[in-house]
Image 1 (cartoon, rainbow, N blue to C red):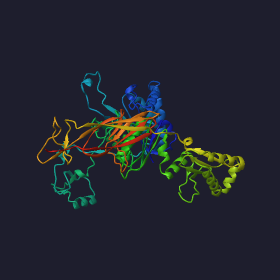
Image 2: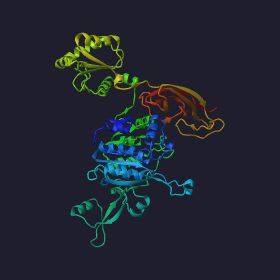
Image 3: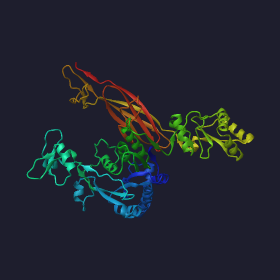
Image 4: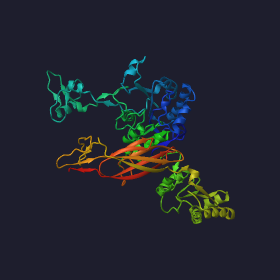
Length: 568
């Protein structure tokens, strides 16, 4: 399953299977020793920043090296790694990390991404050439086995106009005439059947070389055709070092196939996993920042459709309400596996048992609080019928005959378990969900609304939704036999409360209450205050508050806007 995971990537990678990843892209924090490197500002990111900066460049290289060593273990023999860095430590990274771990013989390419051509006044007076590029090191696990698919870009308009000067207007497109120097009889006959042979002087044969048959210009190691994420780009989320989707599209298309697994251990703004999802790859993304994980989750949700694969988000703590009221079978499977057991794939004829331990002892899950004595009685009976020999063996060895997992247990259940132990030497273990996974309460959230009215310079919309003229005094331009619709401005103030501290808010100004899918219009709002303009009608607005544990609360408000202005 596709996964977003909150935590230290080193700890998480150590638990992942060897040779399970096809492609790794990482954009680790650069070695700049500047506070602007702390982008999200939450506890996890600050802790990571302080960890790698407790020493100089040697400490930074050691910090990164042990992580890259784990990445090497995770890659399949056909796999590749792309490490994105800048001039601060690129030489150290290649010599002391990548060459040491992957081997110089598995060096594939050093890609130069020209991220900006901006050479403004400050760069013009600097006593050095401007640093306008990043380096992306491309290494293979085994260069002889690595998967790679060449990438191409289209020809320039000038090139096409200069060379592809013919067009028979038969729908086949533009072509140039080329000499047919070497050919087989089979190829010649095929060209003749397609009417592609052009009569020429003497014995020289020429043929129509169509532009539509060309893949384009092979892409080399200088990437100057991918723009950085500009301030008005549709994909922009407000993450300062956000990488453009086209950059990851090129890497993922070159070094993986559909169904392969792409891994980003520093997920950041989520571009890698978002693009991998679009390109039908499996993916795993890790980050130590709550905000990075939650913003990546929202970007994924915004792009999901009926054909998208599901994904999971793993946090440090789990929300009680989400667990308590989720699908019963889904919860049973989840909590049994978290307990270290094997879930029962059958939902019927299972004696009410939901799984077993690795040693075979039965497990029952109750998605409830205050479990009573009757549950103990029924479970005891089911355990004896499930495997009588195992029951007697565990009983004789003073081992638990079975386990019941629930949110809380009532006094009657606790007393009956004690009685069975004392009087019949039967031990049934009662395990709370919180003993298996950490649980926390999600934030509390409320929303205040202020009507700011119709701004004087507000653009007017016709009923067809087309923008009309502006009027400085009234906001209305009257025309004979017409109606104009004025946009109304409303302020929303979100007030979140959490013991862990609210990190940020997100807003969906077109929330679909039937689908109940939150698609963020604004992903990262630190203040919880937004102004938005609405045309007449009823609108549903949803806001999320995300706390420092990654838990969230959502509040939906409705506003009804009346803004029709009629002539006369």
